[in-house]
Image 1 (cartoon, rainbow, N blue to C red):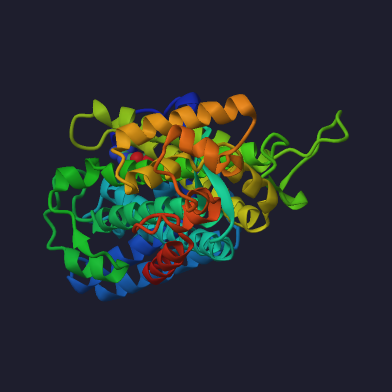
Image 2: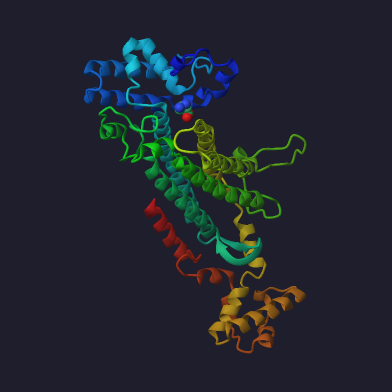
Length: 457
Ligand code: ARG
């Protein structure tokens, strides 16, 4: 193995050790960022006169060649040959351009280099994830637009509570994914900070131009403290926290799809392309994708936990523990990306059984609150109205009736003030339409909410 630090050592590392501490098998995915970062660094070294202009040019050309070779898959990557992606790129560079390649690492350490690579990688991934979240929100808004009048029961304790619409239910998820997007945008700002110049931990004696390097690489800010610059992984933690919440939201939605696609609910039919069968039971159609997404949420929570635990006991500044940041971060990125990529088309292809939803919305006294509100509007204090309607419901349950089916005479037995207009008050459509409060499920209100949600996309 070529080592960037062999001088002080009398013998090679144990073969087991080389294998154990190499990060090449996973940090290879950073090679593009590593090389782009090195190109900017080489240009900066040339501009500031720390190396000669022709030397900087030779480095840039060499790095571009290495990049092309890696892109083409022409380089065999083995943890036995290189400790990490930074060592690999430098070895390839020296092989291409000769001794001048050995000047690249002037005024730089792998500690600030790896922090740079990781930030560049994450910035790129955040942009992609935000696009996926936008596409998902669009899909939900398109669906919602078609279902502002589709009645369904709203639940508390998984018991039918009050009527809402399918559109209103879908918009709840639009809010969640909108907040997720905001969290990613926020995390991006703190990832967009350029650590080069921190060196190993204490900066550098060379007259480098950090502003130039940051501008070359499109960073908005410079890390202000060299110790923090190499020790900080808060941005990775923040990302995993944001990713964990995305997974929470996907998982809750998936749980509902699993419930809704059961015969017991029958609210939704999964498209065949997003469901699977059973090897033994020929009749089965299972919502496996929804279950898998629900299941994968645990991985991302684990990634977050791994990062927090890795960081909590680390003295400043760099410690090799930090190498463990990558697999957790990569796994969180990959998992959320894959889940969103499957989830959005799966939702788009859902077939909603609106008749079953409608039946369920009307069935279970979801209009009882509206009857109480009706009495309140006729001067009965709410607590009393609540009590009266409770007794009405009990009566209905005992006589196998719904609120819509009671006679005027029956109503008057419980509340003398009830008029003929009570039937309109408990009609489920009216219960929905009456909830016009901002944020509520009335069809007109929901249409406004859809317009606002589209505008902020
Ligand atoms: N592979 C290392 C990592 O991922 C790069 C930094 C190595 N620095 C060091 N001082 N050993 O963190």
